[in-house]
Length: 295
Length: 295
Image (cartoon, rainbow over all chains, first blue to last red; front, side, top):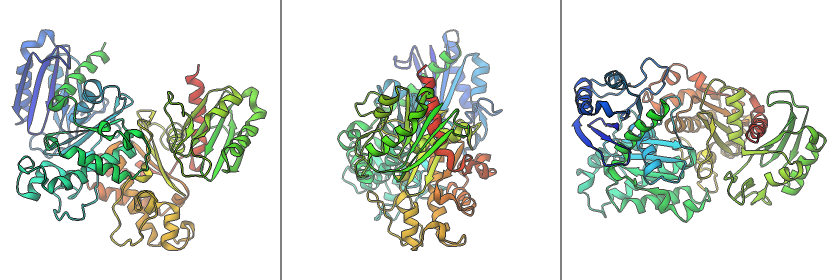
């Protein structure tokens, strides 16, 4: 059995399953409180499966430390979230269960899950964006997760302001970056109502598609992925995808001449094939990968 | 011996060397005319070394086809350059010499050369920008060159306009993208004089650093490389690097809290360690890699 934790800033989702795509034996959703309490409840959830647990995978909110040689490897690091500044996530799990613990960002986990089991099957390169309370982006390139100096933080890419948009943006670091302009709370702050209460012909979607298309174009120009997947709560709006695809084509304006962009963009910019299970499937896949790497 | 070709839109540079870092036995610089004539002159240059040639590497202007299964693998594809639309580069070399031919973009080649032998030694992830007649960017991530759907085209990233800049931009596809605002010809068009004739305290450099810093910030947020290297003719301005580093820090504004950014940015954003030899060294390294892959 594999254990998975999708560790979000608002809630944690835990699952135990025979494989990343099997129906889980058990799941638990819990609110994110203190690290001790939250990780304690995760540990209690996995405890009955101890004898069968091969590995645990954690797909976590960030920023996180992914450098295996670092003394704070497996920690959530400089988050402003109270109590979680330099919180050790991997350590308690590894100490309690003595199994390999895979660890990556929530969006890298989802990108990996989508590549192996979702909308990215058959591709070697996938970028996964989540558009929700915040915005994050992860990537698998040539089958491998991108780390590097830190890890991708695509939610904070600069965007150009829509000419008709007077909302000032709400990112505490960059004000009008992608997240500052296009995350769920930004939509709510701009229009006075949450995204899921806005009608499908509301001008909000024109703005939203404009910002998300800039993100899609930027990753197509830097990472050149075969799939750009947009998940998260804000994307539960079927009218958003056609707008987003149209604007991505407009922004690229014929420069990247590939049929996947010019003729088949509905197969390039897609919702997650795993739907809202992309995150937990990715966490279980991180466990799967960790169990193989430890053999 | 390895053969290398740095294939640019204006000139080709050929070299033959015992290793990518050895002093070449011979070099040739020739203007880019027709594919037949230009590749013919390259072939004539390598001919005397035929018996000793283990492999040839080509670091080429683009866009190019890097998909080995494609019928146009090894071609320059949709370039507007007269005569070069779907020109086969790898085919004639392989046919003539019967050796493995490595092929990648000029900037991917330079990124690889810098990672192995230049300013990126010790790093696993490097982004290389060239700022010259055009702007291009290549990347090695976890030791591997990025390809994907096509290959990176970072020169066409969207940038925010400097508030005091009235230049409209000159990219035929995007008008005011990075290349449209910050390549050598854009500087000349904006100020009426080529970059290398502008004094070091000219306001041009403030604008230039502002655009290049956006490129640096964007790749740090998407690819998270350990080194961001800026080469090419426009970067032969020592005053540009401190400005570029300062503005990159301003744009990121403390969001990515890593000492490499906050404390040691002069080691993160750097000129090429190989100087203007980054491109040809990269081409020779592509030959070296191709010779190993073929064993």
